[in-house]
Length: 325
Image (cartoon, rainbow, N blue to C red; front, side):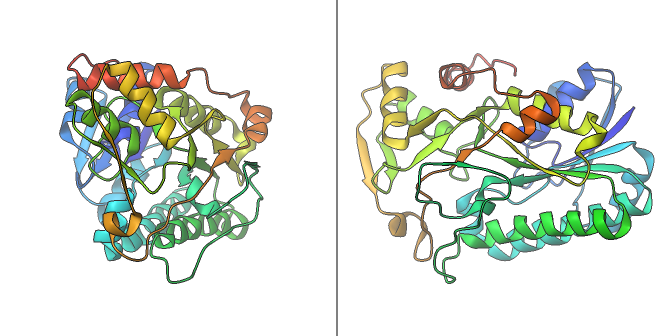
């Protein structure tokens, strides 16, 4: 079997390529290396079944050729991270919407099954501490808040995929990811765990955006990849949306203290208002908890690794002893 992974040199994409190769797949990774990295796939390039194509998901000729030659497509390529959204909003919108449109068009043309990676951000700003089911209402803040540009672009990706499925019979499945974390993730674009770990290991101040009361559920990348491949392998998931994430919540301030204790760090905690970090037009969501009943019923998936496992792997990598997922 042959697979195309768009965003294949990214954090999640590189782990997915690794797993597919281990299971005997031939893999093409398409990545423009804007947020992905050659370092993420250096160990894979020695495998004759791995092919890295450095180009954009916006290139129709490249996407056309790659989709034609594979059996399935994992579409992970996207502009990600709050900092990137603020600094390059045009790129965020064009990459996410036009890139997905291009991938779906050629998957439909060549009748190829496709998995579209979406995000928990499409649920918006939920204030209640309740598990979000796949058909939960969107709860957005003010229409002028720039953060929703990313959420809206990914919601449009979902609508495009469902429209292709309903109108043209495209075989596709949509997965909403909740805070995937693990080795190879960079803190460069605002990802909280690698950023906190890097600061803690350097005994530098750990900056908490806002008051730290917001909570998140973190899922190990190894668990996420199991979920993606299980959903791709199950034909009955076509035309459906699934949450993939952990349900173990922790507040950001408790996360910072846990990382300080784990690393033996003397870092101080500092609190920075969101407007000072990203400028006007950015607010944070208080809570994001996934309901995973649907994915459990469909493929029997649930997370196997704890937050302690995640932090141990990230700390080990940042200390120079990488741990594979």
